[in-house]
Length: 280
Image (tube, rainbow, N blue to C red):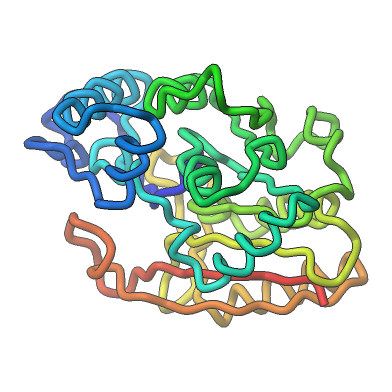
């Protein structure tokens, strides 16, 4: 799962509710999420909390991601991106294609649909189909959502994502790149550039956990490493990826203090990095 929320994993993930990543008490549902659940999913207001809590129970039993324990799987992160008005304007023309990469519950897909985008123009992909299924359960739209979800490993060039090579106008990839090492991220960037249309204006948006002093650090579970970007290193990263592909990529973004976004205490050096990467 690579959700549209920010993901920290503890060293030995546990489904126990005593985990430091499991937040007890009433669901934390922001007004925009509650609005979608009530108006679009047609869930009675008095049932929303119970419904969301039941879905979280199932998700936590599959894998105890911190974003699940902390209710952050309900955040529409890409709608907060400064490029989102442009995304909506382009998608509402009915002529563009959007891919939610590492979509998990695909809450950002539902936000786009709630904002007037035809779900047939949207694709979602993830390695864990269980979370895509839970997304249908969460938003109660299995019979109405026309988005195609693809079970795919981004590192496999022969996955079903190959059907979208050169056809995507906009990719959303929140809490995705930060799960991997620099070298792995370069491989992902190659795939992103293959998927995007080879024209100026093709766009990647998202947000991720970063670090004021960009660094590579071991994964908590002890397998491989993760590279945490600063805005400066993110620009350098796309310069390298673009040069390799023979294209110029313009990177806009901003850093936000992690304490403004995360309920759990984290070192001040961690940041939230919002970005829009555009082919020039």
